[in-house]
Image (cartoon, rainbow, N blue to C red; front, side):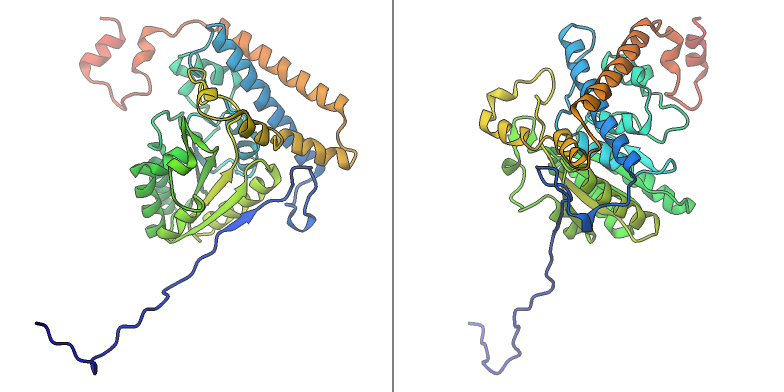
Length: 361
């Protein structure tokens, strides 16, 4: 028997730390704003946000239609997630770097990515992955979560080079179950790197609901285990998303470390055009989130101040559709890639045999 002594030193339980998770919202579902939380944006800037969300919605609808016609490949709709994408991208500077997943067309459009190239990508033309030289956007990443460590690596490079920039990486709630996510979060926390993790929590990882992904009260709290701040944001409130992203970017650029933003939103369409969401979620759930539509919310906010009318909304939509029509024509008129382009952008230096193959020998 092991003897114990009542006179020995005690080991009392102690609370090492307590944590809180903030949730940010500026516009409610009726479009009413908490003026104390309004970000510093001009009327023209808010109107531009509205135009970009409408453009993203119109692009999405046209892409789905083109896929159904056999003119594009499998496509992942973004309907319902426009505020999370446009609001966050609107806060970026040209010197910042972006690592998308495969569902960030709204962010691409906000940053000025050529619309014909976006269509080319979903049409299976890899030339679309050649980012214009004036944009710091990495290629689309279809493998879930694998872009997150790449983003943290870029943030480490920024630290070494002492660049006044930050990195934003986008992913969905399903990616938070991947090892890539946790390894990247851990490294970002250890080295306090200038990276903003933006999780578009759209409630579903294909057919797996959020409750099947985590037992946590929020995804934002996962940041706490890695030593940095996590914030839950109303992802259907473009002003809240912009404010939260702007704060996180300024913090990152100043050397104060990373931030995890959980944008609480909803995928109102199928996971992709190869999916049927009606098989695993209810009409009632979709109807509930449809009333929280981010575009309708901003329209109500603008209308309350006399800055939006149905006629103005119609004009914005018509202009977006015309822009996309021209892009579709340009995409479909592009000549097929030359076989030699297969070698471009793959290796820094070609072997002798590859160089000969490129010349067609």
